[in-house]
Image (cartoon, rainbow, N blue to C red; front, side, top):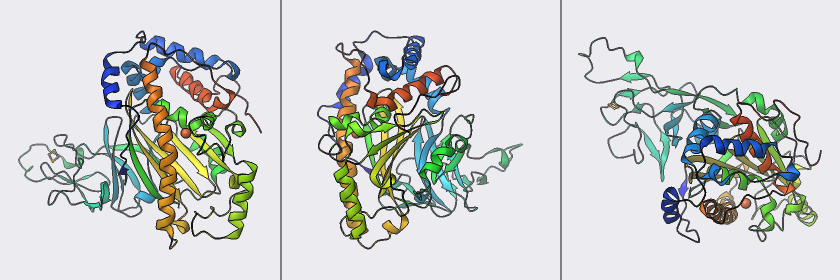
Amino acid sequence: MSATRMEWKPAFEPLAFARQSSTRTAQRPLTLAEIQHGIVEAGKLPLNRATTLPAQAYTSEEFFAWETEHVLRAGWQCVAHVSQIPAAGDFLNLDLLGEPLIVVRGKDEAVRVLSRVCPHRSMDIMPEGFGYEGHTLAEAREGKPDCGQTRLLLCPYHAWTFELDGQLKACPEMQQAENFCRDDFFLKPFRSETWNGFIFVNLDGQSPPLADGLTEMANDLAPFPLDTMKLVIAREWDCPFNWKVLVENFMESYHHLGIHHKSLQPMMPARDTWTERERRHYVRSHLPYKDSVREAYQAFAEKGDFSDDLPPVAGLNDTQKSEWGLFLVHPTFLLATAPDRVIWYRLQPLGPDRLKLVTTTLVPAETAARENFPHLREKALKQLTEFHLEDMEVCTAVQRGFYASGWQPGRLSHLEMPVWLFHRYLAARIQGKWPTDDGDAAAGQRS
Ligand code: FES
Ligand SMILES: [Fe+2]
């Protein structure tokens, strides 16, 4: 992704704690079955008796290996937005759950997600920093080492070349290899789906089709022109915490009362936030503006002076004009809609206490085309960074808490309904099911 690496210094040294934590934890080690049992039991509790999960669900290597296989690789992971690869030959590289991937738009305009592992001797065809002089056909986008433009894919090791759809085009000096058939060698394609402009990959190829489970959500989001919006900000973060800590943090707004009491709470008070009924594949919450904020925003939108703030997205309904919406498509697609922008978080889990995160902002194409957009972008970047820094601090400290002898199981507020729904999803996956499969969907907090 065209991400700027974010310099971020937490209140304490996360690397030292990670080293310590990987070898020593005050919690009794639990077996995989015990952790799974703890999650399934938590998932049975009603919201008004809901608890946190066992700490080991966030620290165990064994549980991380299980969820990598059965939750993450088995699910749909969002890897890019179409605006990042608009033209044939545009590509974007990322490593996801152990797979070096290239997301590339072919000459036929189709978007594919291919392995970057060369079928000759397993070289990464575009390792980090691939853009060195003379060793690639690809042009890296300036200042963005992980994306660019190319007409063919060239492995820098022995110069095998591939078409943009992964087919082997040429391989020098292979004429003496007996029974060698070029068609047998290609860059492995992964199953992918583009939904509302977001490109998803399903690494194990077995997940139910993505769009089928999101029809209702797509209708709900329809006024946002997601497939033509432009991704204009991408910021990369090295996170010393479990991916589930981030999902839980993103989705619940109870913490507006605490860590965001100066930033988000004055705009969207925690008390007013609410969550819709349970869905099989996603969670949906609403963060209404405080009355005074709603009125001020309405006056701003009517005035039409967008010299210093992003203009509203055209065609939103009254609700969408006066709140933020939060969405989690299980397991890791995190989306926030605001009246003037959409925020998407890309997650690349690396281990029980490691996560690579890219925080992004998308705006309508006409907003991005405004003359004063560079100024508006700077401001949007500052806003995105400021409240995320607050979240980085708490998520980092939460992970440290999981290793401490002072850790104890906690209880959830009704405002943490999205966390409870996420736990119910994990409990369902442990049992090979989906939420709502064999019971009534949990009721929403408002209709
Ligand atoms: S490993 Fe790619 S060409 Fe040899
Ligand atoms: Fe937050």
